[in-house]
Image (cartoon, rainbow, N blue to C red):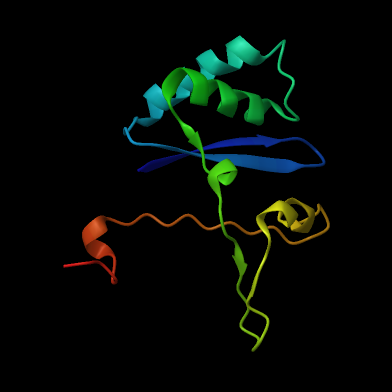
Length: 120
C-alpha cells in the first residue's frame, strides 16, 4: 500500500486528507491526476472541502482509498500513566486541534527491511 496526501490551507484552517493506493505513482503522475480531479469537481462539489471532493473523485476514477474513512480504531497515546485511551472514531473530528492549538506533523520514510518488528 502506498500513501498520498492532499492538503488545503487558508488564513484560518489547515486540513489534509490521506489516501492509499496499491499502485505507486511518482510525484508528477500524482499531481496530474489530482489536477484532473480538481478540474472535474471544482465548480460542482458538495463535500465540505475541495480536498474531500478531490479525494472522492480519485476514489471513483482511480481506485484510491480515503484512509480516514476506513479508520476502525484510534488510540490517544500519552506519556502519563493511565492517559493512553481509545478515542471513538466518530469523536476524533471533535477532538481535532483548533487554530489555537500547537500543530505538529511527522513524516517517516522507511523501507520494509528497516522496520524493527517484521515477520521473518
